[in-house]
Image (tube, rainbow, N blue to C red; front, side, top):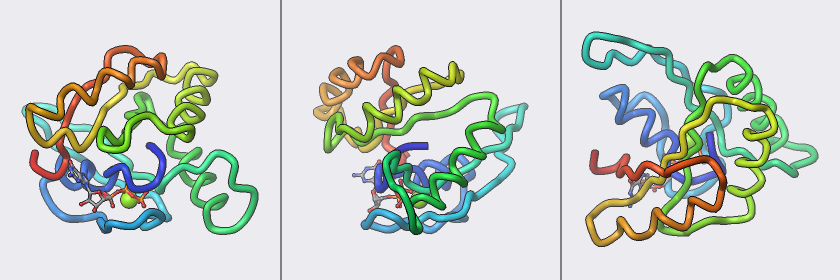
Length: 142
Ligand SMILES: Nc1nc2c(ncn2[C@@H]2O[C@H](COP(=O)(O)OP(=O)(O)OP(=O)(O)O)[C@@H](O)[C@H]2O)c(=O)[nH]1
Ligand SMILES: [Mg+2]
């Protein structure tokens, strides 16, 4: 899960190994949840891609997307909170991290768009989300 446009569907496709979810350069692309069984080494797991989470949306499509994302969170054993290293920590990230902490949900903080070594320094500021050590990835480049 994560706010719109951080690369959730790109990561979903990357882990799945095929382009199942629609990826686009504008926020609000994913609406329903996407589900898949990911085979990883000798094990496999269910993975859900959710639409961009907007905590304070009161009505309309953003609120409906959030409901769908909330269902996915409730039904998950682990949540990956994806954030965007290019943009740095945003108020929405802070809000979503707080929600996950309140729910006491097992979560992994992953910073996306760390496409090269020079960008690695961008991950450190995400410590302030209080979700442990951030893990750096580039969903786009693998
Ligand atoms: N540079 C870079 N861009 C990325 C990376 N991952 C995703 N993007 C770009 O970020 C944009 C959004 O990607 P999506 O995967 O659609 O993002 P999303 O979080 O699913 O967006 P919503 O479904 O709208 O919430 C696209 O233009 C992607 O190509 C990455 O690792 N590096
Ligand atoms: Mg998406």
